[in-house]
Image (cartoon, rainbow, N blue to C red; front, side):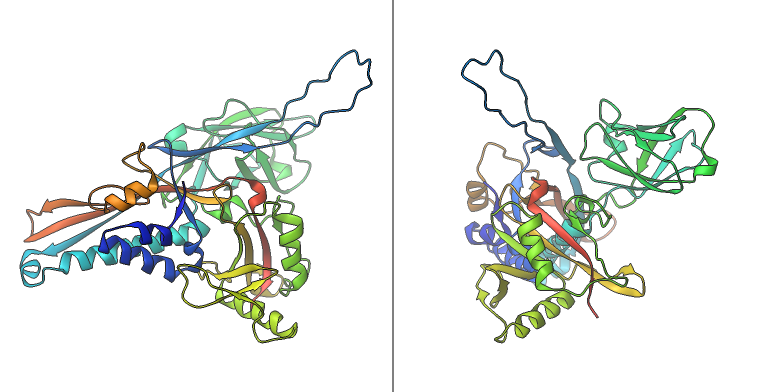
Length: 418
């Protein structure tokens, strides 16, 4: 069973864990909804994602045969990333204040929770790539989720002549994905055999080689962080579940935008919520006032202090990790609004736990972070330091984020905030 941080705080018997989890939940309204789910593997978080289905067909009474057709899908895997922070407490200070260690660990765990919250939206593992040997006219631009050369080795990129075209095989995949024609200068999206892995390359048509070639592509990271929701929903025109603005300088937030996200894009009907930063929330409240009343209807959500405004029964959660730095035309302070389903089949956080045979509730009720994994957070006493008169404790979290269904989240980009 998946739990939110607020639910974990209610269940735990450890005061340190309880108070810390509540402070994390109230610092970011989205964290009060985000569910944490234990990964089956100590190394990765995986789930099957449904693809296209094949419809059955009506037949006559004397049908000679039945046409067989099976649906497809793919196994989505996200490597668990590790977040570590040490806290040193001087022995003389511990002797003077018995609560000093607990206070310091409370701050350290709270800081870890804020980083987890930020990376749920903005996390991105890959920061660069190298094509070896280089293919003239082809340069790395960006890559999507689940790509890791450290764990799965290199991938391959193939250029073929005639009708010039490129294809890509991601690290760990068996085969190349569909070929993409590259008839002119531009940025092209390539998908691997596993379609949830994508690569964007910049093509300079005049520099493309005169003969076909294949090269290895390896990916590097300087952040070592998990991929967040913006990696799942990149701000790219034509991408599924992403709506770009139509105005030359971005679009104003409107009821039509909200209705589009609800009715046309997020098809799951679970625990849905809008998520936007404070500037978009101000625009949202202004919209509600124009429709009559002061703020519209409101909800009380466990883990969030005060009422939360809603539209069509769906709450608007404030998350200030979402930046207002998107650019279009003369608009330079544009932002994105998300509609997300927080049910276990929607957007979740997978974490590594030490006791895979124990339920989340049992683990949280009987353990604190210093004795076992609580939502992936562990606290360990490293011990006394030789170089200074201090004792070191370590806070560790291992986890990753997952969008269980592509239809469980959507993003409206380039919305005006100023």
